[in-house]
Amino acid sequence: EQIILFCDYLLYSAIGFIKNFPENNKRGKKN
Image (cartoon, rainbow, N blue to C red; front, side, top):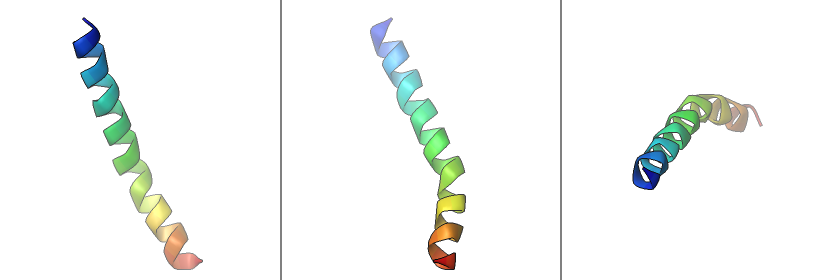
């Protein structure tokens, strides 16, 4: 069970990072 939760956590973190990456990239270009 812990392994599954850990994998879900990594997947959730990866999805959040990918979703936020374009916004961070645009902000970086603006600055």
